[in-house]
Amino acid sequence: MTKTNRNIDVWVSYDGKELKRQVIMHKGENDGIERAQADYPHAVYRDRLSVEWIASQIAQEFHNEVTSLYKRYDGSWSFANPHDPERVTTWVENTSEVKRLYSTAFIAGYEEEVAKRDEAARPKVQPQPAATPATPTGATVRVKNVDRDNPNQYVYYLELVDPTYIDGVFEIKDPLVVYFEGAAAPETPTPTQLSSYGASSTTPGRTTAGSSYAAYEATSKPPQRPRKPHGSYWKKQ
Image (cartoon, rainbow, N blue to C red; front, side, top):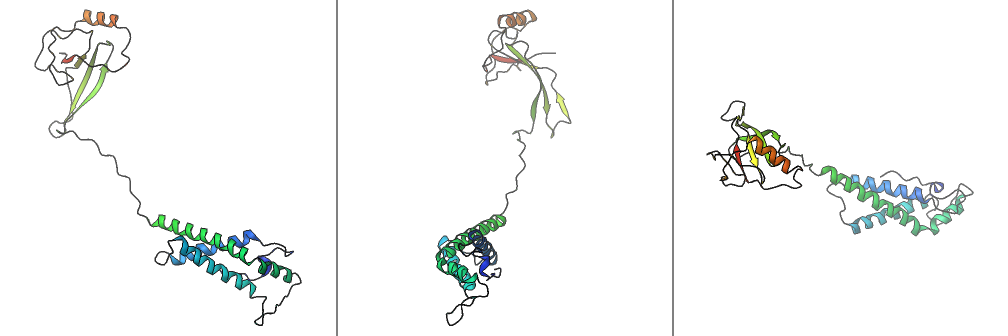
């Protein structure tokens, strides 16, 4: 740790009436940081009681080191400055407060430095790129465009991507029509006629231009919530 400046005027005010509290705490904090750096990682104190104990020991050493500059071995005092007697008196009479200020700051500096070094040593989790969802067959049907001019039937224009078996993107010629209540069904059911809910549509009749416009006029507003289709079919082009 940094060598202590033993001059009493560093730790007590010029007039000798009060401690320089911030200076004492700054010394304690720096000593705590340096001690943690010296202890880390194998000799570091992990529990608060141990840190408090070492802080109190070093605080006592700090106080004694400053005092020893002025106190002779025979117990008498030696002063080079006329203000020193009053300063040393304040220093000695406030021994408990000096140790409290120093220890509190030492503990904070020690624990903060240990926490900082623990965080730096913790393995960093590398973000993984989002996986591209795969289809069970490896093939994907994509919607190129949707025609919703008629609120009772939507026309979906599709394309097929199957890179293992098809070169490039295959555009499906016939669009898929999904119709709802209020729209006429196709005239003749075909093998390719589908239902969005797993069953073939059995409603006969094919949507004509006249019936589509009639349905559109009858339902002038778009649906306020998703609706369940009545069925679907491929619209021959």
